[in-house]
Amino acid sequence: MSSLGKGLASAALGALLQARGYSVRLRKLDPYLNVDPGTMSPFEHGEVFVTDDGAETDLDLGHYERFTGVSARQTDSISSGRVYSNVLEKERRGDYLGKTIQVIPHVTNEIKDFIRIGEDEVDFMLCEIGGTVGDIEGLPFFEAIRQFAQDKPRGQSIFMHLTLLPYVKASGELKTKPTQHSVKELRSIGLQPDILVCRSEYDIPDKEREKIALFCNVRKDAVIAAYDLPSIYEAPLAYHRAGLDQAVLDAFQITPAPKPDMTKWIDVHDRIVNAEGEVRIAVVGKYTQLEDAYKSLAEALTHGGMANRVKVKTEWIGSEIFEREDPAPYLEGFHAILVPGGFGERGTEGMIKAATFARERKIPYLGICLGMQMAVIEAARNTLGITNAGSEEFDHEAGVKRFTPVVYHLKEWVQGNHAVQRKIGDAKGGTMRLGAYTAALTPGSKVAQAYGATTIEERHRHRYEVDNQYRQALEKEGLMFSGMSPDGKLPEIAEWKDHPWFIGVQFHPELKSRPFDPHPLFADFIRAAKEDERLV
Ligand code: GLN
Image 1 (cartoon, rainbow, N blue to C red):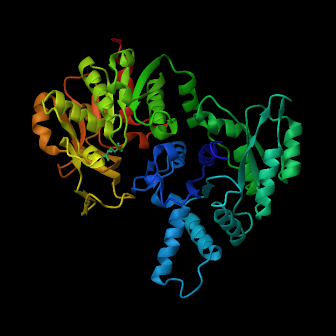
Image 2 (spheres, protein in one colour):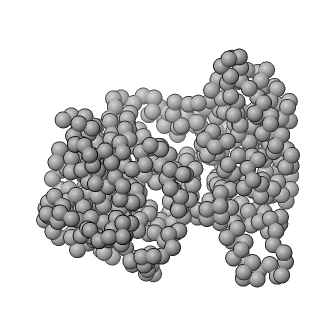
Image 3 (cartoon, rainbow, N blue to C red):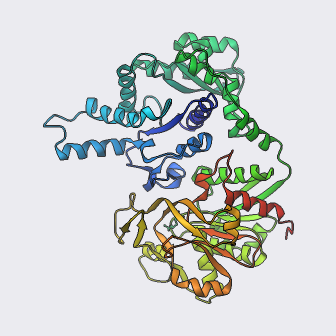
């Protein structure tokens, strides 16, 4: 079932294979029918992870990147929706030469072709299938990987299966039956797992391990325990101790196995365990009930803490509350405030209040995407006196014109060497300004100092944009547009000059942060928070 940590297990295995000197790439296959998660609410599916090449993907790709440092690509994420849409497109084009189109072989071939993209580039390709064994949507994927293993020479692919060992309090036992049944289900569709990763709250006694091995037809040392961990970044070390990488190399009959170099993960672990002190960050956003909605953000904050050897305590505050109540009692006592990305008007007036509070009280503020847009609107309202400053996004949503559009609908921009054009009323899927874009930073600005560079590349996902025509007026008030698109047209970063640390960015820096390579903005944000000793 979902939420057991399949994504994390895959990511950790990727890291362990790298530690043994291999190159890896990770892929996610999702059985749902959306073409990509871009059109799903964060409440449905958690965060949408954006790749450099502009794909809107599953949040597991974020784990893959954070654990392996390998940037994901468009071709690392696929859903049933995409598979069917490709197959139907080919059918309409006449590519199937008059054949009847069927799940086997046409859909399964499409899935196998996807798995094989760039397979020669790496030593190991790790493909994770989302959902649960037995789901109707998952069947073509399971059938495809069954065929895939048959197509390959012997010993070139293995199957891993993640199961739950529930602990029954009444009898004080770990139960192996759910594992047995799910393996039975897999075997009934022709898949015999080589390795079982068993998620368990408690130690798996030898007796239980033997039982699982016997009933599930796997070797005893291929029954790998996956315990709950205080930090996800312990997963590579924990899985290594549990023998996962050894079991994988054994299953591939790679002997002798290259020795692992775990220094990177020992350092990461050390920074987490030996953090000194704690900074408290308030994240004032709109999907705060579900932490997965801001997965990469939560991780990037942790990485920022690791860079400064402090623990980061993040509190999630629904911004709507500030539309009814004074933010001061809620926000006083935090070392920094972060307003993250989001879509739609709900809660945005509260974000603006949080931005005012941070600006006036000189508390470090990081605004990301919507959080930057709200900070600029705040400045337009409260320093330029444009009292109805707002975003066109909200007028479009409401179908009435109420705001002066300081943030407007982006109709044209440059990508590489061509112009992209958009209209209101375009289809929603995949039409935002997506993926990596370059920005030029003002030398000497706070961001340039934080990055230690004046040219950066960051990932975007937005439809609206701060209107550059307010630049001069805002800069006169001290809000500097310290990062711009290379053509000078699109404001990418705004920062208050006379403030210890107030930076808004139009992109999503959190997507590129790694535990062993914390993102410079997050590292600097947490540094500023740490230095913010004037707890008001
Ligand atoms: N809704 C805003 C836009 O589309 C902000 C998007 C975001 O925060 N990712 O521009």
